[in-house]
Image (cartoon, rainbow, N blue to C red; front, side, top):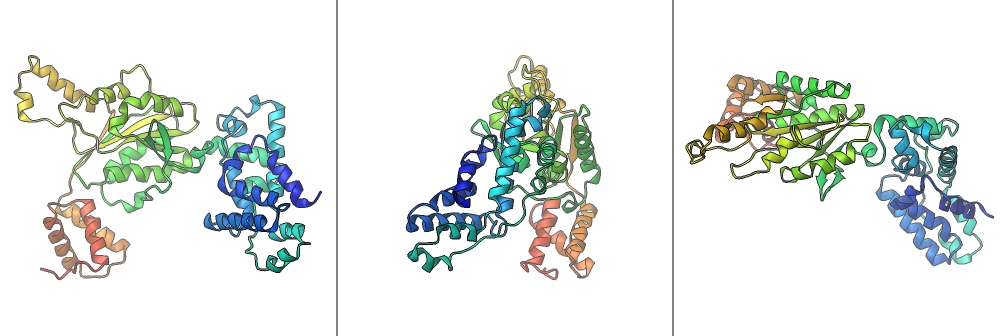
Length: 417
């Protein structure tokens, strides 16, 4: 039996890590290994399919990294038990099968283009094109796979810290179609990108750190004027603490009735989750606020200890009111008002992001100017920034960032009148 046929048979016999065969690149590699015994035209088609996928995924210089990465992020009996800290409860046969699969994956990841070509030599037609075929490099496997003796232990430690499956691969998710979907390209904003509001962000960050340390913490409402960085603060905290086991699931307001289903899916996962509800507000006729009240406190479906709710809103009390609401024909008007105010009271931590005054606004502008190394007269810079804000209806950190972006792009000048 030649080396390539043996590799195809080994790959087809994967058990615990069989999930990698559903991944696009490993499956294309398996088809290429099998195609070594097919007619030349079919073999070349398989070669092109595999190499094209490998290149497109950015693994041209490391087949080993591609295959071991697929294994590390695979969701299977071993990775799920490791994430839950229950590896010791697995049968020895499962552990042996996982260890054997790791050896197989390491073995096939070392196969070179020449290994496959040499197994196909003998056909004159093939030999004429073999030299011109695009190649790949085998590279190095991920660190957890480099020492097969310790691989099982190292992989288990990775899962215990990072979870398994998509929760190990991604940090941000969205609740859609009654399921958790990963966000492939989340906002990369950092705490250093945000200027001003240090006290407010400190409160939110302290609450998050306590949550990660296992302390009973408060759901958090970030409220205040538009453009003050409420949503950006939440996203920056995720980016800072995701390496410590923090994950975030954004839940649209109109899906709050599905909250029990969401927490059911994440309650047993050994990570910490923030359920993020952005731009939260309700009209007087919108009764979905009752669902949020039940989610925050009082519903039969308890919020698990690994979950917090962070919401942002332009309104302190979340429900849009008019004077007619208070002077309406409700016989128990005071009860109605208390009902509308009780929702925000269920957030244990409420943090106010007020619109900055002129001094704070210009301080933010100058901090951004320093960050981007904008060397100009600061009096002229301040005057231009103030004009920019007045033209857009008010000062805010968002306005300051837009001003600096426009200045850097040459769309405005500091000497404009």
